[in-house]
Structures are given as structure tokens and as C-alpha cells.
Image (cartoon, rainbow, N blue to C red):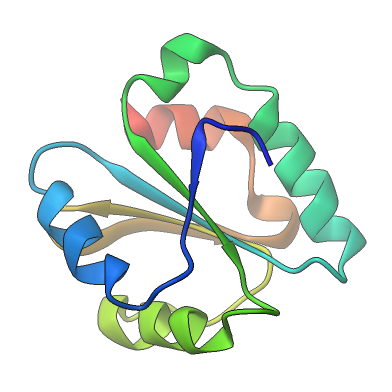
Length: 113
């Protein structure tokens, strides 16, 4: 995984992410290591330039290893669980989510601006 992505491995991190979302967008990528569509979406996201990565904090969740965190994201932010899935948080709320082939670099750039 690209070092610009922070690993989301502890459910306690979610409260920190919510707090940070008051200051800058927080991007959560829920990745299934068993899914080719998820790998394709991850490859697209990793192609983003450094300038883009300076606009938000980016978190990578291996949802096979951490299904409890994935479930908490779905419950806490009222988004239907999908895989792969991108969730953008602002001011403690999910302001954007996309899954599967709907995850596009162009839309994510627009949502993080």
C-alpha cells in the first residue's frame, strides 16, 4: 500500500477521523483483498498525484481483516456496506460514498476539493 494512505486497523481510530473531518476531508477506502474490482479501484486511486493527497487524509481499510471497522463505518455514517467503497467525511458526516465501478478518480477529486 502506498505510504500516502494511513492504515485503518483499530475501531478507536474512527473517533479521531471524525474529529479531523472538522478541519479537512477524510477519505476512507474499504478494500477487499479478495476482489479484482477492489484491486482495480485501488490501482486507480494510487495513480493520484501528490497535490491531490495534500487536500485530505486518506485511510485504507482491509475489510477482510477488519470487518468490525467496516460495519462501524456503515452504522456510524449511515452508508450501506459495499466493497470496494470510498467514503468521504466532512464535519463528522459522510458527504460522499461510491462503490465498485462507480469509484472514479474524477469524482473523488471533485469531492475532496
